[in-house]
Length: 287
Image 1 (tube, rainbow, N blue to C red):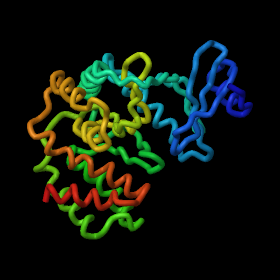
Image 2 (spheres, rainbow, N blue to C red):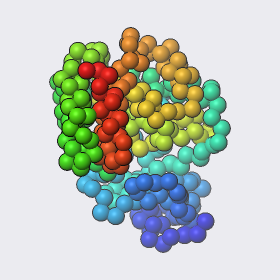
Image 3 (tube, helix red, strand yellow):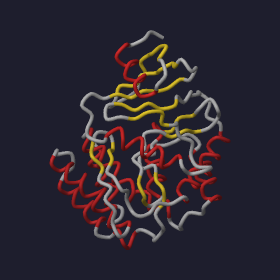
């Protein structure tokens, strides 16, 4: 590894340790990722973004710490340093192996994280989903929070960006009007909030580590719906272990599409394509 002086200097300011070498890490869609080798022998990941939105990295760091506070929960990288312009995390060494035992353990760990709960529906600070602001102001019920903090803001943005037709938007709005009847009443769970397979890293320690949270208190079926939307290796085993640890409410599989509306609308806002149409098609199943 070579050494990028500016990146190394900023990391040293936050960590109080010398950076021996740096190397670029591929795959980041938003921030620039750099691998750091420290004089302590530790390896770290540094994420940087010039002119980052206010609170961008601080919100991610807070979410990681909140989720990490659960004993026996999902593994997450330690936060080594955070500032307005960057975030430094413990390095997760990935593996090409995807053992089914790791999937089973992950299901149990996810159930434990969810069961740790939250103080309410939402969080005490806003966050981000990708580059988009993510409002987290608490609400009195999950249907209210999901409607006014998740589905409707991104439906409006998708309309503004011509990423969804009026017909499909009307189908989504019809589901919003039925959320109280469609969703079972549960206590707030401690959610990752953006739990797609790209944020699940299979480590060399034979565990699944999760990154890039959009953490908040919410309905546990949100994380499960995201996993099913974009897939995960051995997902049936994950779900079996989860259900064994904390049984799911009857009909959870039939409700997955309701909580997939939010990520589909976010993708419509960010990428366009057919995500708006997919949101409309999913919504139509519940109207």
